[in-house]
Amino acid sequence: MPIDNTEESGRGAALKILADILGRGGYSNIALRRGLDARADMPRERRAFITECVNTTLRRLLTLDYIINAVASVKTDDMDPLILNLLRMSVCQIAFMDGEPEYAVCDEAVKLAVTSGRGHFKGFVNGVLRNIIRRLPAITASIERLTGADYLEVKHSCPKAVINWLTPYLGAGETAKMLEYINENRPTVTVCVNTLKTDADTLRGMFRKIGAEALPALFPELRPWALRVSGMPGITGMKAYKDGFFHVMDESAMLAVLAAGLKPGMKALDACAAPGGKAFLAAYMMGDAGEIVAGDIHEHKVKLTKDGAERLGLRSVRAGLRDAAAVFPDQENLYDVVFADVPCSGLGLIGKRPDIRYNFSGAEVSKLQGLQRRILTASMKYLKTGGVLVYSTCTLTPEENEKNILWATKHTKNTKDPKASLLWERRILPHREGTDGFYIAKLTKE
Image 1 (cartoon, rainbow, N blue to C red):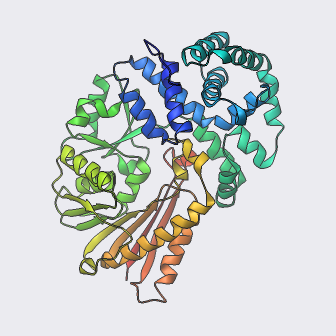
Image 2 (image 1 turned 120 degrees about the vertical axis):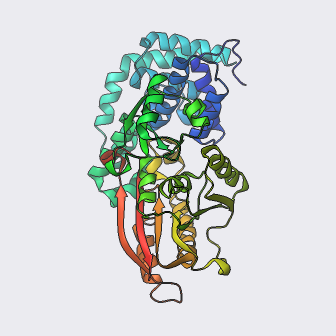
């Protein structure tokens, strides 16, 4: 039964959004944005609370369930879904968020159980939360006594399925540091400056006027284009965005575009383009002089790229339907640069999209690797001899990164496919760089 508040509270809104993500399988970033857009008239502080409550609950989900199971007579697997999410977000406020006193959080949770049509659970909610308030130090101490993958799973709210993939790749110490970092640090929104219309300093002033802070890029080489923005929920609603002065894009993805060595007049292919960020930055770097074909297999995503290019005033970006894994013989040896930012498991994004960690599957990695290799093969055929292929992912598995590049360079030496040579590769880790986790490999066609 949906929550029916005459004047919806921030907690009520957060509970609805959590239901969309955890109950209906919605992507956290999309569900949160949709929920906030539907509440555009809410005060800015309340919208900020909703964002923090939803994201922190998702980041700490397994830790919260451990705490709840330590005191509840009914275990989380058997609870009413709405009551479970209500308990999760309430324990999150008690254990991980600053704000109202603990007992006020408890009282508000009981009220929300009633207004949600779950009044018969109000005694259960009250009892569980008051027990947790009393016993939280002891429960927290019990987490510290766990060891190995059990400790990482509960302490950092990361399923063992993910830990068992990350640890051989990063090492146990790096894995623990990364998980701690993404849970303790709030991701910054990074915008890419449309240097055809403005510059970074001018755009910083625009943000400053509306009370948002915009800092220079973490990577010095990106400072003409990247700004890190905080204190601005709903960034796409501001006038500067609508006027095409910037698009949203993480610095790690910008590095992949910078790696190509673009020049005006080049012909580039962005094989997996939507929503268009790489193609847009390529157009800025080329002075909008040249041609950038931005392809995607889904029509609605092609429309996103077209709409973005129009908003930004870009003439060189041409978006269209395209299967990145297919080979079109009439386009072979056509492009100076090909970007292959391939579909992947997304483990580098779990700081921004905490739900990814709970939906990760090793079987899915194997399926994705086959697709990634088909895209690599097709992309190399489209490239001119001596051209540059930039392969990238936003994940942290060797199967989708280094092993694919090793396969590409070895595979092409024993087939009729064009020969691929690796120029350099780079792995970007959130806790080391302060960006999304990312992998970039730069190859050339011999």
